Image (cartoon, rainbow, N blue to C red; front, side, top):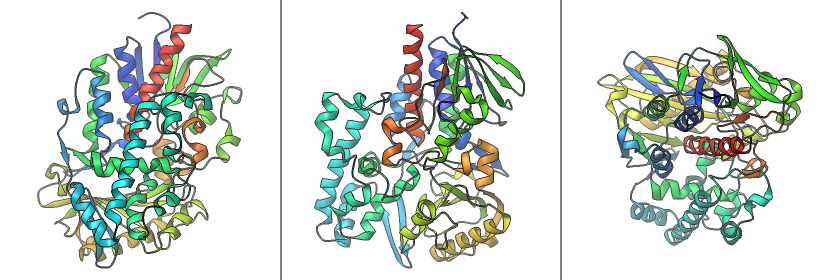
Length: 494
């Protein structure tokens, strides 16, 4: 392989795996290193006693983005895993004996919305049409483009869409224009947590996620999200990438502003290009000398980080009634929970919950007669994370499960694992234990996200949830495409 085409990718998350596949296919000599003994990053898998838990992402959304990525390799997701559209898509509990199932059938959802608020079905049709337009505009005009300045938005289609994108309005204000029912607004706003924000600080352009939810649908890959990780790994290996696990990057070696190698626990690896999928703040402030940091410590101190989480991975004897594959439980005053994340960071006294129970769809992820259950409470990053606090939050989770299922879930536990701030830090080098990265506030979206190409080091690039377009598995796939396009562009110039 010729000089100038040696690539070291740091971190085998979704973005790192996808970029490795693309660059190896394009003829680069790609070495992907991962500090842990398994690939996947936050999308890794924990297997124990016949249970298989997705450690991170559990929602398969935007199937068109996956199709587009696999098409780059002349194949389809169906060549690697089987997809099933979930019905119900998910279930939401608003309190005792008050729940709403979101169907895969839009007409059913329109009827249910109308029952909650007269006139809501017509309002929802209009809301969804606006969401569809936003989504199509985003995919066509800027998700797949590197954004570095306001001039990147000065094309005819974006200017035409302009005010209809509602980029300068927050989502909470926007949904209130359509619905008076707080219950319906929660249905349309809950996903902001998974973007690392609150409805009050997230631009209304992200209402396009309702198009994703209600029109494109919520899907499940047989075997879990781990099947997706394995599929992308296969693409990378087939394309010629080399993957080395248990190999931790300790420094990016730079000479005269040009990347030269990556120092690792297994020795130095020469590189003409380094593509970092490790957490952006860690790479900038730890792996680079101060003179080569485009975003030093003081930059990160001013950023709004997305939430951390306290999660339980539970292998249960028996099954749980009254739960769907995806279940959410909202407290009556859910803004109190958002405030505890963004405004006054503290452990929530009355948290909202997310539960993933994939055995409702897929019997292969647990022994026969058992339930695979993952629980999640979004919490502020940077909180004290002690065993005592974990026990208290887990107890709140069990109490919520008792209200929903009527079952004493603690007595059903066969295996249990708790994961929170200190685990995100030790496993993923996550700043303050954030589970997701950088929040999608207005001033941290699009051109305001950290850049894909280093401004201080030639040959250093970034991929993953901190860069454009942001948080989520589909966005990580897109970021890989965008980063590789930038690398190709720069290589042509040299």
